[in-house]
Image 1 (cartoon, helix red, strand yellow):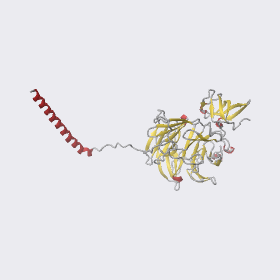
Image 2: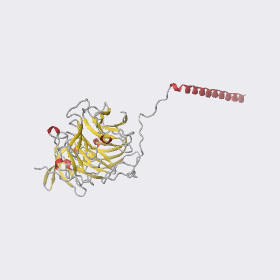
Image 3: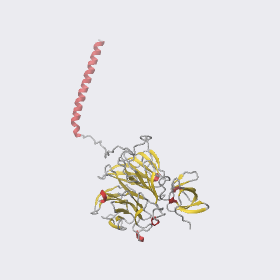
Image 4: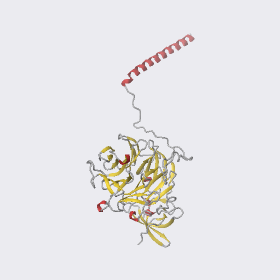
Length: 461
């Protein structure tokens, strides 16, 4: 009896299970038949970016402007400085020297030379990358347009071809194309000293970038919280993007993988990319080191899609994977980096070879490379900042602090029993008594410091 009951129970269970699976199968078919009434949710990301594999930093030279020290510096992916120029020292002519404010912006011309601009000095230069000589200058140092000058607070400038340079003439509310052969303005957008939202009028222009070889100009209108693409021939706006929550949009770089635009909002501490449909592809405010982005002043996009961010609030340049915020490399800078420009050619004009700068053997995936840019050594011979063999260490103390900026303006240096009031901008680095490198922002009146560099400007009378 027990065996019979056991067999019966097994059969009953089998019948029940069979009915269950049969019911489930029919139920599934019924549900499948109704699925057309409930479309599957779209699980695709809002924007997807295909990034080619990276085999290295993707530049031969990274150029930067160091506002605090009035210098342009170029260094390799390994952090070796191969070019540097103090912009108030030979071979730059004295007519272009300016001590009130340092050089702020640099771009690379089609011929490989450097186009530099000074917001405070009111000038734009072309500098020969081999000789450091000034080949061309537009504007007069310290002379604004309302006093008879040519510029008023120029921002980034780009050389379009072999003789034309487009300049964002910020405080004049103009974008100008200047012919280097005649120094005449051959095209402009905006109206002198007029701000408004009428066609052809700019609203706080802080940046311009040529697109398609200068057939179009991408202009940042900071006060309007937008960027506009202007056709050169017609002066019509052919594309625009507005970000209502923006605080201070300025420089724009182009992503070579998709021709999208990358912008920095320095007051918000934000970097983002927008596509040609006006959609934000990615947006970064915090990086993989868990720190918020501190006062980004410029960006540059590498061929693998990674983004270089000039993070002047932390005296560094970081290479970041934009979709994740992961820091790949961090270049530590002695100075305030205000703009950057990537160069695919070395100083001799030889293009970067693919794979030439492969990841070094000590690279640990997932952890950023920390690279010190030693801008007080090799490459600093030209421009009065001293080389490893010729530098002098002069003891002194700060005698003057600029009241408007809080930065050290002059220091009193003693050598051979004589005291020289000299400009801080002429020196590559300032150290305290313990030998620690100090930010110029932290130097106070009365601080006893030592300076590494050459005395290139004697202000004593």
